Length: 352
Image (cartoon, rainbow, N blue to C red):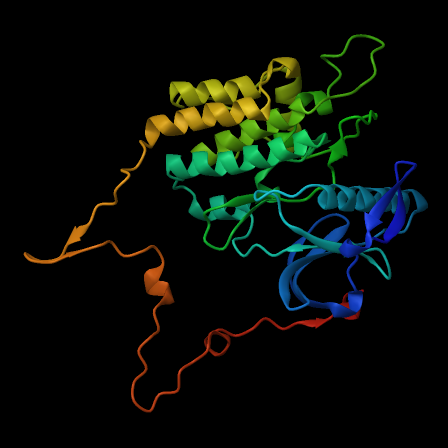
């Protein structure tokens, strides 16, 4: 197996050639997202529908170095971990421009999904199901010694059927073994653990650092948001929310949550990181709570009695969508491609 050598935090690491994408085979479609240093497009790679993240280096030498470091880090993380609740990594390339290619999730971001639902809320079982997806993704990262640091609805994506959540955006992920001085740009204030930006809990002379429990705090805020479908710290700016959480120990109200669920949420956002549960414990608590609101289904499916003398089994989920549509005489059947217009795609080199 060949490898492409890059440098990560001053240390060399090997990126297997199997992850290197050929830019000539990338077709770029409509833009579906944009951040400070990157734009994300719908696209195709080897006839596979993908999301193409094109990273722009910037202009200043320091900015270029930082952007390249984040890119290399993200590729390293994505290529190391695979899980059904993590966005699937397809590959990356650094020349002629930095690109990260992942699976395309047609359901969009959890943030957009929730905003479109407001003021309605998710069914509680759906909210807990989504939170379990998120917790399992973070548990996988932590088992590999990786801290995500930027857990929020904008970085959580839904499958096309809106039944599964997958964690994305490893641009700020870090290996827990690395220590560093924190920066204000780490994560997003409203969902960030206070120890990421506050020195209040640190003893004098102690180095500023954190551990994987920062993700537990962010998870609690996301879980609260899933249940209430409201912006946490509503009425505050991001900086006001950060100040209130760090210096006044303010949290969103858990008073109207069921007792068992409130216990999970409040334990995850405790001020002392060491007293927060790990994600294996969080998953067990969520499963226990789910069992109290969703009793196990009968082992034998109920059957539908259609008439006095006939009993039919229930229709399988999705059966109707698989049935062929009746074609009237003289009508030409339409293929899926004909009935739904395709998004225009262009060659990769037109995007830079």
